[in-house]
Image (cartoon, rainbow, N blue to C red; front, side):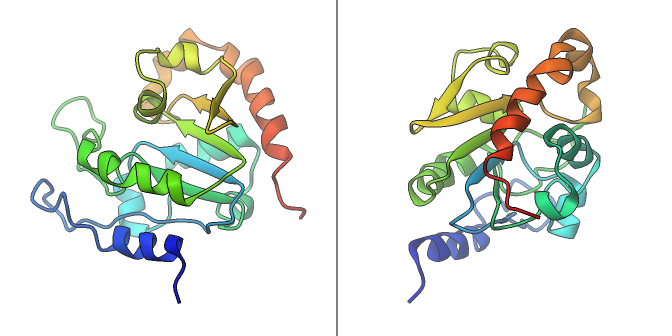
Length: 195
């Protein structure tokens, strides 16, 4: 008999709530096992992730893996990281600004409560302002990145979005890459499987 997590993942894979909003067929991104000790929640898959079915398989992912000091095998280890997002499908390219569209709110409203009920990670990593605002509304990303936080009584860290389009934030807050990222790595190391 399938577990509640397996049932949830099958339902999510079949989700077509946003199909009328996209000019492409939705492809919900699902990655990880229920037992993974770390839950990473991002914004939404990029076009490349949509095409490959592999989360953060793009330029943003390279920077993120570097920040976390994880190689590809470690990062994509489904027993280590459960990777989710505020929008599970590629939302399409934005008409202005060079980035992607915002993730549709209906996705996080529909799926995030169920995901949080089904998974019991020991550590949460929130990547970008959309994930940060969902859990910590009314606070600025620049504050949250440097605060000690928790979700469901477990430690949580907020990271800026690693997109190449986010260069101004990195210049304005160099202490993230110079100091804060080492705090995150130290905690993440506790849950990393032995190589």
